[in-house]
Length: 164
Length: 84
Image (cartoon, rainbow over all chains, first blue to last red):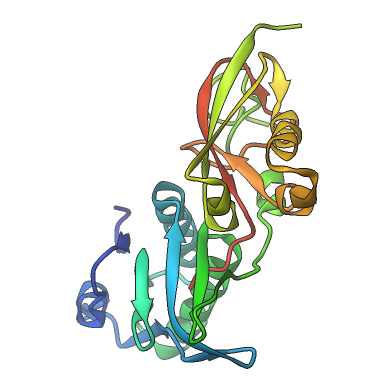
């Protein structure tokens, strides 16, 4: 765990109070939270629930990377991110993000940054389940761009990318 | 031509329709992109767009296209993501 950053993949109900508790501190005057909820409709179809598939190791690493990047942009901010892995009914909590900062503007902006980056970069997938019994994996954002900036090297010289 | 090696590819998202793991054989020294070509042959050309919009990863991160596969290993195939 990086200082003031806690990220996790959860297979149990995510408690927003845990997120707020982690980022709370007397020096922080603002906490912004984002809570993702399974809704009962999508593009005209009635949804009963969503299965969340997650590459746990890489997803957690991506959450850490995103929060570290945000901390570089908004110094003094603290982060909690928990993403659900498994099946949720309508109303279930899929993700909780909490960001604290001394003043409110940084918390708002950083929290928005974190959820938008997670949607683009974290290896997480959704399979929607519909009232009529069908299920579909949802389309998403290709990671091909991230592949061009990968930290993995060429495969000839070890696990980390070479300098330069 | 290098020796034949086995690559076990863990499936996520849309790739779950093909099972939890797909095993393919390639020649040692192949590039990551050649694994994707072998995967298309394995699951069928109608899934080419899905494979081409996906990336291969090990436990460290996403593999660049020019990553060279030297030995048998476990990888993951990551289709386009939609978390949150």
